[in-house]
Length: 117
Image: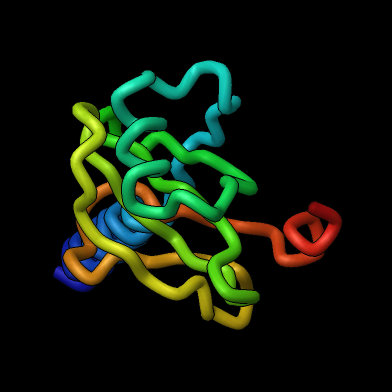
């Protein structure tokens, strides 16, 4: 009986780790030249004076731009048609942006790398 309980507990613990790993997967970085024109236009419409440091692919449902706005790093999300979704300050200590809804990938930024741009 004890072996069965240990086996069940181990299986549960392992599955919990796998679920946590899924939430913590980073969004892929995308080169500027691969961003669709609609998304670029959406960014320039929303932030005409700003330029993007890094683009991320958000689970093939859109794109997230890391950029400087008034000396503050921010993240702005756009859908695949270039429609603005939301903006958030990039303020996590370790340089990770975590979505409120816990769905999909996280836009992880390396602050040391960002400061070089």
